[in-house]
Every structure is written in structure tokens, then in C-alpha cells.
Image 1 (cartoon, rainbow, N blue to C red):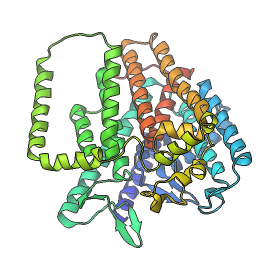
Image 2: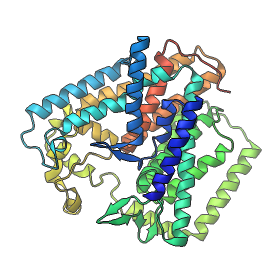
Image 3: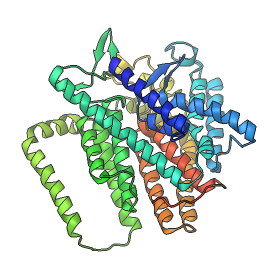
Image 4: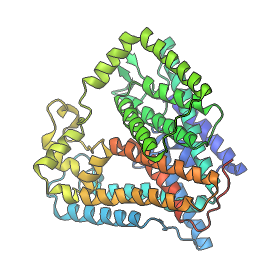
Length: 456
């Protein structure tokens, strides 16, 4: 992990420099480190750089709020309050009164007290929402925070391709995923090296880049740009995401692309307009893609067959036993099993194929919709969905009173919020991105001191 630590050290120095110059604040730093999933420290618990930065923000903002007498607990959307209250109460009641035998998978916080750790994690995840009210003063601030996230993805792409080419020439993985029995572990598939950069496993990097692709695409649709040459950049994001050979990334892209296309069809007036420049641009891209498919067809067809067609995407290793448990005991569908408890119920239904690494281990659903239903039931799922429904609706209400440019910005926020919500329902890996976008949208709606500055 030497090379990773060197990069982290440079980034820490960079952040300190930016903070001292007041070009960045802690909110910028937290957003930048968000997609760096391998950046972790053991502080009694393994915490990511994003979680550590969030804790620092909570500490600093609490001190400032006490001095300035600000409300540190304002959440804006009332359904966020309802969901958190429901999640806390049901988790405590179910964990204390309805579970007799906890799997012993470690110490207290990995067994009987796991639900307490999960409640703290839930509150820390949602803490970005009240924190946002203290760091966002204008629409332009939201724009710059989104740009910061894209800059982080650009760095991950650069580091990822550096990792890939260095491995091809030297067989040295500069950013290994970890170690097993003293040996460094890399992302490999069928003797093919899969880049991971510092974005976690290849699938985590892939999913982050696909979210980046759709952020650019959503805002470009409403004539809002973040970075020069970003139309090319979004395809670099997409190409890199596919280069990880992540099944999750490939399938997620298809799902989100269909949702995005359907959204555009439903919300747009149908206009047939011939644009010569766009036609040439798209035709050129199709030619390049066609050439690559023709040249590397054997390799591409092997990947599609092995990584997608031969895998049970609808019911993966962690999801399958949870689905079986809920079918056998439908009474848990209503209120769930409480945060962090589902493995205690679902472990008898682990398939023989996955038993060697899932037995006596902690696991949750990989699909966001199933995670919420299995832990909080349909009631919790309904409250969670209402958070985003009301946020989407209220963004539409507020935008009517703004300038044309800011109306477009709010439209783009509505679209990307919907896309990332669907991404979360498909894969839980984007939970922090989802709650961050919720926090940004929440401030735009509920902050009384927000200034609607022009983006450009």
C-alpha cells in the first residue's frame, strides 16, 4: 500500500493548502474523498476518509453552531425526521425483544450490539444533511460542490489507468485491493488485470464513474457545464467504468440509461430537429465503437458471456438468502428485521455455492430496495421513498420563481436525484452519493438564506 499512502499524503497536503487559502472548506474535502473507497483508517472501527471528514465536520460545526446559536439539527424535509425516528425505534425494539440468538461473528459490536453500531452509522450518514445548511449559501455553492466530486473522479481515472499500464509492463499492482495471508491481492478475472485505482474494488470504481457520467449528462441536457471538454470526459468515465469488467457497473449503466431515456421522453416535448454537428459527432463515436467491437469481438463477447449472461444478476450471493427468508417469513416484510440484523435470520438459506465465504459472516443485501425492505420493512421503504418524492416535487415548486438559468439547474438536480435514487435501489454502494445529493437539494428548497446566484 506504499503508493496509495503516497497519494493520500499528497492529497492531505493539498487539502491543508486549500483550507488555509480558504479556497476549500471541510465540505469540499468530504466530497472530494467520497469516491476514494480504499482510503481507510482503523480508529477502533474501520472508517473511510469520507466518514472521518464527516466526523470532523460534525465536531467543528457543533462548536461554531454553539457560538453563533445556529440550529445544528435542522433536517428540512419532515419525512427525513419520520424515517430516522422509525428506523431507530423499530431497530431497538426488534433487536432487544425479537431476536434470541445473534450470530457470534466477533466482539460485542459485531454480535449482540451490532444494531447499535448500525444506528450510529445511520446517523453519521444522514448528518451530512444538517451540515449542508451550514456550508451552502447559494445555488452556485451547490454547483461547485458537484464540480469537486467530478474532479475527484478525474483523479481516480488518471490513477486507474496508471495502475493498469504499470501492471501491463511490470506486473506490479501499485494499488492492490488488500492482502491475504501476507500476499497482495489484485483485481483479477480469468488472468486479466482489472483496475481499481483508489476507488475500492473494481465494481465500486465502475459505479462511481457511471454516476459521474450521468451527473455530466443530466446537467449538459439543461445547458450547464462543469469542466472544459466534459462531453469527451463523460465517455472517458464510461469507457473506464467498462474497463474494470464490473458486471454491476455494466448492468447499472443499462438500467440508468433506460431510466434517463424514459424520463426525457416523458418530460420533454417531442421536437424533431436535425443538428449537423451533433449528427457528425455521434456518427464519429459510433464508428470508433464499431471498429473496437469488430477488432476485439472475441474478447468482448467472452466478457459479456461470462460476466453478464452466465450470472444470476437478479438474485446475487447476498441477496438470494434474504429473498428466501422474506418469502418464508412474510411477516418480516412489513416492519423488517432492524438495522444490521438480517444476517441473523437469513444465514440458514445461504446456498452451498456461497457457503464457504458467507457462513457465520455479516452480510446485507447488495440491492438498496431489498436492504431497506429487509431491515425497515415496507413501512420504512415507503417513508424512504417519500423523502425523495417530496424533494423532487418541491424542487419543481421552488424553481418556478427563479431565473431561467437557475430553473435549468433545478431541473438537472431533479433528474440526477432520480437517477442516483434508482442506482441506489439497484446497488447500495452509492448510498453516500445519494444522501449527499439529497443534502444539496434539501438546502436549495428549505434554506431561508440561500442566494440564487447565476451558475455562469
